[in-house]
Each structure stands twice: as structure tokens, then as C-alpha cells.
Length: 183
Image (cartoon, rainbow, N blue to C red; front, side):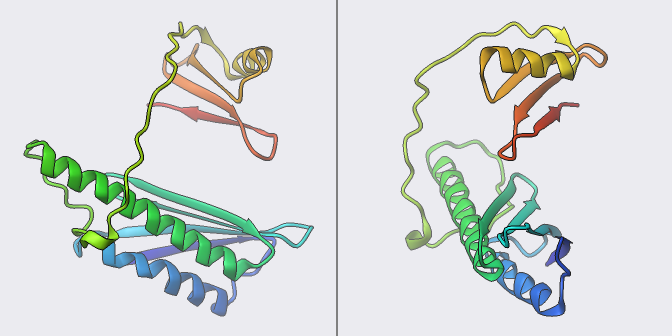
């Protein structure tokens, strides 16, 4: 049911690595309905200081699952990523079941199979403590990065001057800049 797209950066993806990743991530199949065609995008990286990073992204019908881990042990990172993804699924499914039980929306939730009561996660209350209103000004990405640096934030939302779409620039953990564009 889950197809795999496994890439390696600074590492050769051997048969043993491939089979280990597929075995671990395939354990998530029990949470999905049988008619789902899923692809797990797995990126394995090894850095000069001998640390390994495992990133897994699984786009599904109603949710995109993503987890990553960096450690000295590649196989250990695969284990931790699988656990993080499983936690995300259980948390999301718990919310869906609670919503289905409390609100009659008529919407069919067919991405995941039902969780057993012991698999449900205690939901933490999310409280919004501050609200900001902003005016989105047309500019290019370079100007948005300058604005982000001026206000000393990790991200900046702006309207792309050429396309008119809302975009976001953000500072990545590695210090580089990322750009999220909307359609």
C-alpha cells in the first residue's frame, strides 16, 4: 500500500538500509484504509561530522505527515521518525473521532481506520495568546527577507508583487532562507 521514494545524500542507499526503512515505515499502514495509495518520500543524509538525518514525508488525502530526526545512528533515527509519524497519526485521528462524535458534520473521514480507545491521545488545549493583524504589501522575496531581518523574526508574510499570491519567507534551522508560495 505504501510506495517508497528513498533518496540518499552523501550516503549510498544499500539494500539493507532500504529494507529497514520500508519495514519500519510500513508499520504505519495499519492506520490507513486499504484503498489508499500512499507514497513515503524518505531522505537520508549523512553529514561530515558523522551525524545522520532522516526525513519522511507522506502526503495523504486529508493530511500530510512529516517527521525528521538527526542523530549519530541512522537506524535509530529511522525508528524515532516512525514513532513520531505514528504519534501524529494517532493525535490527528483522535481529533477526527472527537469531532465526529461531538459534531454532526456529515463529512466522511476515510483517510484512517478507527483507533482503539487505548490508542487515542490525550488532547492538549491549544490557546491562542496573541493575535496580530498585518497589512500584506506587494514586494519580491529579497525585500521580504530584508523586512524579516529588520523586525528580527524567523518568518515574514508578504504579497508577491509579480503574482499577487501570498508568500512566506522563513529562516531554516541551517541558517538559509526558505520560501513558501501559495497558488
